[in-house]
Amino acid sequence: MKTNWAGNVTFSAAQAVTPTTADDLRAILRGSPAVHVVGSGHSFSPIADTTGTLLSLAQMPEVFEVDGRTVRVGAGMTLAALAPLLHDAGLALHTLPSLPHITIAGAIATATHGSGARSLAGAVRSVEVMRGDGSVVELTSAGAAVSMGALGVVTSVTLDVVPSFDVAQTVYEDVAWTTLLVQLEQIFEGAYSVSAFVDWQGGATLWVKHRLGDEPFAFPGRAADGPRHPVTGQPPSRCTEQGGVPGPWHERLPHFKAEFTPSVGQELQTEYFVPRTRAVTALRALAEMSTVISPLVQACEIRTISAEPQWLSPAVDRDSLAIHFTWVPNTPAVLALLPRLEEAIAPRPHWGKLFTVPPTLLAARYPQWDAFRALANEHDPKGVFRNDFLTRYIGPAATT
Ligand SMILES: Cc1cc2nc3c(=O)[nH]c(=O)nc-3n(C[C@H](O)[C@H](O)[C@H](O)COP(=O)(O)OP(=O)(O)OC[C@H]3O[C@@H](n4cnc5c(N)ncnc54)[C@H](O)[C@@H]3O)c2cc1C
Image 1 (spheres, rainbow, N blue to C red):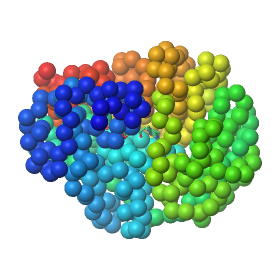
Image 2: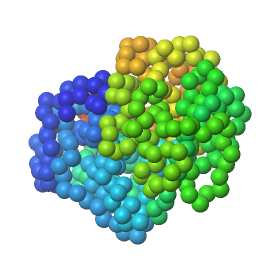
Image 3: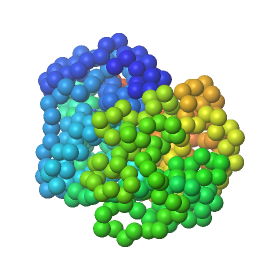
Image 4: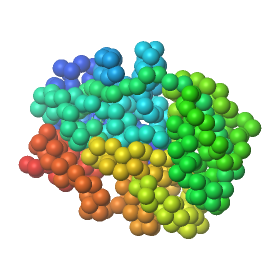
């Protein structure tokens, strides 16, 4: 893998390797002063980069072990591969992001989320990590899931799962911006998972994923008369089935079907988390900047994430509203705009997307920031996994 999915990050790794066994992996780690794992490369920030050895776990043996309401899975497995296995076992993940193409470890390392529930990191019981010296530890600390690869190579993850469930997806169009703001809480509490796509100029479209058996809510707007894509002009055939047709959780919770390349590809992304208590204020502040946002934005999606204990989750300790931007692929223009948005709403940004919040400000927004740094130093004292991104945000390793 030479670049990330969007092509805005060119990996600076001296070599890329794909171990096939734990012994291979251990030998690679023992011989490499600098390593980082890349999942499916869907992050927009340089979070997976390294100047040393870039590792992919895509060829490691499959792990899928169900034990009651938990499952242990191999870190390099994609959500698209995991979901049908769980469904066949009568089980489900409690949430899924908009696309299933990403790896389990990559998703939890950045607190990847859908809407209406905790992030995927919120389901983590424990992570098995191989450290730079080849030793293996099972970590249950609340700091271990959202690690951005700073602790070592996550080789498997044990997740809480729920009984499988069916979902019907309906798109509601022509929701007035003022209605969205006035009814924000009712709308986002009105179904199992709700996303609002907004154009900042007066309108919103709701993507409602209703769990069968739940009480229906009368959403504003009108049901779309055919399938839709979140980005105007893109083919709806890439999107999961809409129109209220029930189907299994993993074929409705993601916006995009597993068998298609998600989204347009020609894009950048940013996502900002604010507390639910500040949701309307933040949305109003951004709407006031619509004239500078609109020329660069392809789509904007609002979701909710429940408070969770994972230290570096942007939803740590507080119910959050996440405001997502899919930008046109103009990196200089996007990076020039972001500080204005960040100043206006003081967010915790998504680790896998673009942001410019300075490290000191970010540290002050996470109560367990220093605890995470200590955890990273404990498990990676030589800084084998400390790439430029991590060094910038959490500092150099203890002994470098
Ligand atoms: C089209 C598109 C749609 C998206 N939709 C959503 C969405 O709905 N919700 C959301 O929250 N995000 C979304 N994202 C962002 C995406 O979910 C995150 O960037 C996620 O981290 C990508 O997973 P990955 O497997 O590609 O990981 P990568 O981007 O490859 O890596 C992410 C991080 O995980 C670490 N990592 C990966 N594997 C391991 C391992 N085995 N051990 C240790 N560290 C590891 C990497 O080192 C890196 O720090 C979207 C991205 C795209 C491109």
